[in-house]
Image (cartoon, rainbow, N blue to C red; front, top):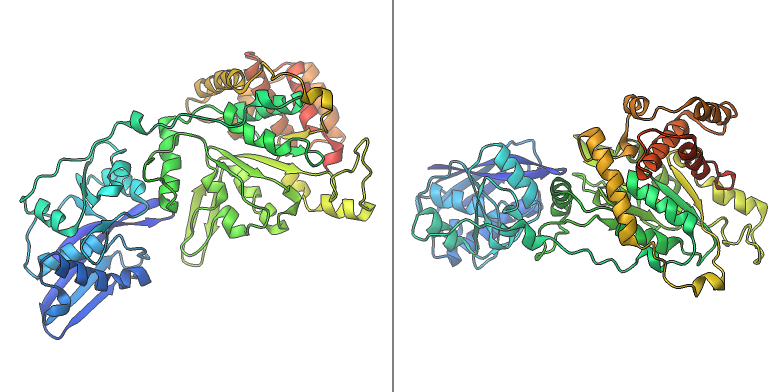
Length: 507
């Protein structure tokens, strides 16, 4: 008898429906899975057979049956143990041990040897795809039900084991659809570092405010211990909360990566990723076969902090060019090509030289001129040209350290940032920020007066500003004007934007 059930597979960050056909006929014992399965899928025949026997049914390993399982489409690589449950149900139907209506139902779940269902990763994109394909019901492990229930408009049934699943399908047991209140999963922001705690560094804190308001990329340079790392870690405290659509975007990424917490199926706080400088290119931008999200995708809609920026391998740094420019990374392999989202705010921190004290007013630099040149050469011109704000972070004097906490705390700055972001939402009719503007939008929203044009002409004609730099200065000036509540970009706004851009010592 031929049985058919439906499941899904993950390709990149999206799900594709998988049709599972099971044929069981009398003959020599045989159990084969075809359709480009990986090792975990091939091993499911052993888990499925034992789980079926543990649930009180006749296992394919104890009968003279020839069982063939086909996973379609055959050219899609099938990975993971999520096909255990649909394969087991398909066999039980094909061997005429149970009967149920499998149409419009999606099945997911890894089987333990005693029949229990273990949670799987990538549930959220599968549920979103199932809803889009007009499936009405998804049956999956109970531990995954809260994540699946975030998507409204599809019936989510959480089950604990194979026997309970069969009882539900044969209408011997009633299981109510799992429902959640989004408010129950919203995590309250509790930032350990407040900008009000950071003494001095008003120039750097102003740059952080601009970076947060327009999602601009930022480079901090200064001697060791000046406060570069703590400034970067304080940036999330002034970023606005994620919208629900953005939360689903980020949660989808973490679901596929298997990084979702059991007690927190929805991510509503902006990610902050800080990979070590020894990380590989694949770890940073994503990779593998099939490709998996890297740090830049895990930092989507949040902050990517790269400390000791020049210490990263040159090829790793150069791989950042495309995602910084386009907000996505395209990973090409021989058999397929995938685009992963990567709209992050880059915060890079660097010392002025290997020892860290080049140009320090009191400490003598121990580096030779050639060492300093080699250190700076690690940061190529095309990469640096894609960064919007260059900030010098000087050593703080003792008088500044003992000053009382600043009134200009993160909460107050965040209100100004949220106001500027609201202006951008109304301007673009979406969650798009100023840093994401294309050239037609720059021409429309970044018009400047004659004095400002003359100022920019001087720097462009002298070669101090590239074409890309020219556009980035206009974007930053637009953000500064938004923070100022100004509809037009004035010469004051443009001059401030240029002051963050034209830093000879960073080149």
